[in-house]
Image (cartoon, rainbow, N blue to C red; front, side, top):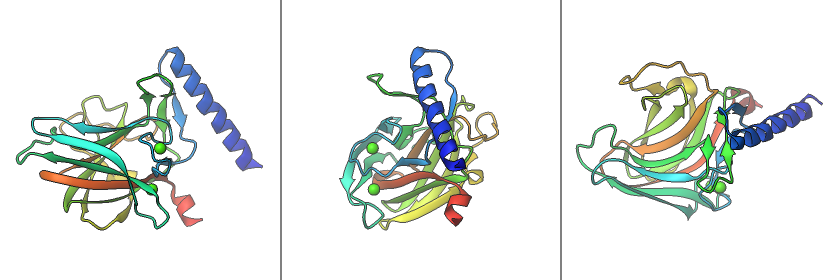
Length: 217
Ligand SMILES: [Ca+2]
Ligand SMILES: [Ca+2]
């Protein structure tokens, strides 16, 4: 009984948030219905909230493109996201290259508008990746951070798929901006960037917020 009540009320708040934000005023924080961000199994470039994955390349000679490819981490996976590009030798930390998906905001055509994602019910982010051997950055953005000093973790990849489960407390600001306490109530984006330089290709799949309780059940 309790479960059905919770899911019904969550559903109502998400719908409320979608309609409220399309009408204008300050975005509200809405709990994510499920922790799932994307497994790419529908073959498109929109996440489960309906917001797009975007190729991000900032800085001279920095290139990034993305497309949905066949395969993935799990044996039953049909699709995953491939990111390819290059990042010049000596590129600075702000010259990023990779992929980003928003968890708040609107699509360009205005058909989807999502309030700030409240993931405080979850304990961390899980995802699977593989890629050109080297170091990569996985980033969580929040509305409280206004100077780009978002929360990062670093992972080492090679061509083999690997599954990661990273608790929120392992994500850290770099320290060039103002320190902000992580609340999980105002998440704006997830990004996957290369930390290596040179040409690269990497894959992303199974992006999901997890709770320890669900993992143990
Ligand atoms: Ca998949
Ligand atoms: Ca999709």
